[in-house]
Length: 104
Image (spheres, rainbow, N blue to C red):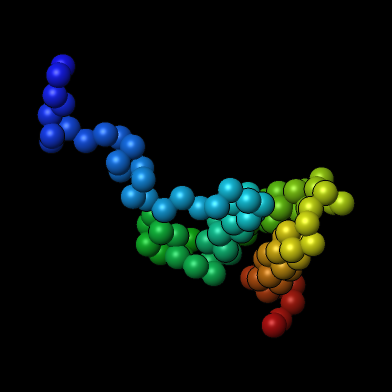
């Protein structure tokens, strides 16, 4: 095993070319936020490339973010609190409109 085959790629080569999101609070919130937007029919599901509305699942994702908000109260930086609060507000308004509870 003196010389490695030049055509054999190191798995780390592929990993280094893919963008890695920052390791911060938004990395926890954004996946739930994005999935909730998909389930609210606000954005297309990238896997099936179509809108996929599921209000029950959307509500569950909003509730998960609300639970995160409750459990982290007093432990977040000001900008993290604002970010989470803004995400929750946007999702709640979209949910209420989709569920025909309010008209925007």
